[in-house]
Amino acid sequence: MNIRLYHPNSIAENTSELLSKEHTHYIVNVMRLKRGSTINFFNKDGEWKSEIIFLEKNRVEVKFLEKIKKASSLSYIELAICLVKKNPMENILQKATELGVSKIIPIVSERTEVKELNHDRAKKIVTEATEQSNQFKPPEISQIIKLKDFINNINGSSKLFFADINSKEKLKKTDIEENNLKILLIGPEGDFSPAEREIILQNKNTIPFSISKNILRSDTATISALSLLCYPFDL
Image (cartoon, rainbow, N blue to C red):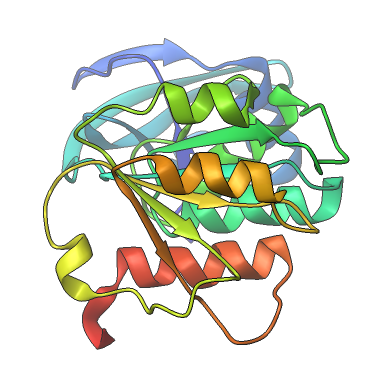
């Protein structure tokens, strides 16, 4: 079994390092590895094969043996998502990470019922999803922002892909071929208010599109829309 663990700090071949309490607990108590076992550590610079050279209950030291993978290119896709309840929000964090977004922006809108996000829990979810999905860098999770402020802060060169239940337009492959920043906006359960839709559509870089003729839950809409943006082969 190939175990991959995220290591945010820099790594150099033929150096050794004591692991964090979290990684030590995982290796000793969850995976029950032994001295001499191998683990892969990764970060934004690539992936390294390592060996456990010291192991006790509360102390694990590894040696980084060799770099086995170079980091892949960074994603140009970000997800701006109106906060939803705990279980669907955690599903969104996990699946958005698996699909390769580089940043997740939690938004509060007029009809958003949830106003807070446990950032520590969110970071743990995206880190584990990064480890599982063979990627190199967990997505950044921004601080919560109000919808109006989010729209006003969008960079002029970015494209805002608005998953709009009122749109009849399908996403076009030509809309997403350029290597500029793409931001996917998903609304709350109950959709945006008419005033909010007007603000979103007034942005010159907004591309409204329809995901389905059915009304989708936020987590389903996120997965469907991101699949189109990340893998537009069938458009």
